[in-house]
Length: 249
Image 1 (cartoon, rainbow, N blue to C red):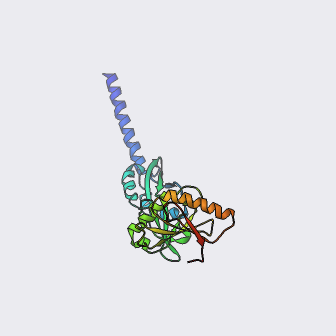
Image 2 (image 1 turned 90 degrees about the vertical axis):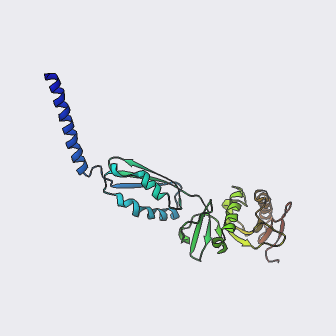
Image 3 (image 1 turned 60 degrees about the vertical axis):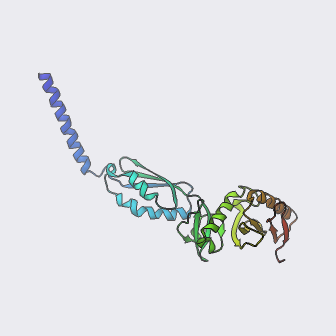
């Protein structure tokens, strides 16, 4: 009986100790949130600017016990922001929260004014406007119709997706896109495309983009080799391209 009494006493004392310890921990700030660390995949000035909009909501949890914070609720709330593709929150005891963010891939910027652009994600979602100095590195869509006409905007995004990754006429070398209104001979959209590395201008529709882009790249290679600048390449043909001086109409 003495042995049983000893174990019972030890058990009760342990529970009391745990209770007291738990009480002091709950009153202590040791396990209260003090630091929030953000990790953004492929960050940029634009995403850094957007990240500031998260702080107002997340900072409201600073000072709370870490075990009381529902990270899944916060994830759900933050993921509603249009620039976020995926987000994962992790608790790091005793006092830290880590927020890992994967932003949406931005394929273009629509020019809203001389100083403002509106980024467009690869799924055609319009993101928050920003000053052009903070704009993501992406081709410029230079017409307000890209803002008001969702179908035209989607056509431009699909066009950019179909461009080759490398070459003189590739996604990374496109500087600006302007819509050209359709003629009776064209049922698809036509774009006037300006490039970063050459003064050549390209007219191209949205049919067989990859094949036409490869042809245009070869023509640009030829023009550069022979130092022929200020040319317009018309790629709106099924089996050929036409080249003419820019000042010719």
